[in-house]
Length: 260
Image (cartoon, rainbow, N blue to C red; front, top):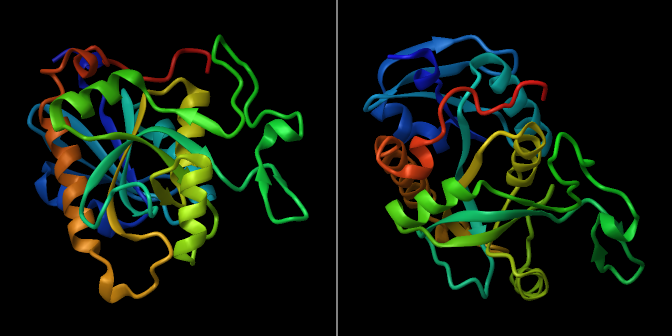
């Protein structure tokens, strides 16, 4: 096999729990040291896959992704895990969706009335224009080809995800956020990973299973197991069919352009 054709797909999650079904499915497994965490490498079908649990929150997600990219030069990166569904998104426990784009809901301006505005209100970009890639403020799209494969092969809905440093603890507040920002799933990592991948020019996708309704703190009403199994099942199917869909088959070699 040509070296470029054997570049891995990197799959990251905040916790080892969110990767467990994928880890169990890997064959020819081997641990490899990483500067941020220990990565696990193996194969799903003929595809080389690297798994890593980066830790909870945006700093961990960003640093863990960058360290893993340096360690294994992946062709693409996928964030997998669980998230809360906003009331009004029409998602329920154990359903799975893919991010069409990520919205960073912390960075920007907090008004005196408690309302929030993104970085555009301050006149700054989160990442400036570079090497033909556009400047980004609070919204970062995921990779169009990976979106197509997730929608066409897996049948996942493509929805806007949101990332916050602190989870929303009130159902009514979550419903108001959904209505104002048109967001469907909330997490604590996705926008950071999306921003780093976008900055590097690395194809990126995000798949999450719904573990709970945003604002519902009674964990007896959560379904972590269903969310983990559903999200990992979808990503496993994508990886096993990687060479069959034109959009993913076209992603060979390192996904980070030279000079990035």
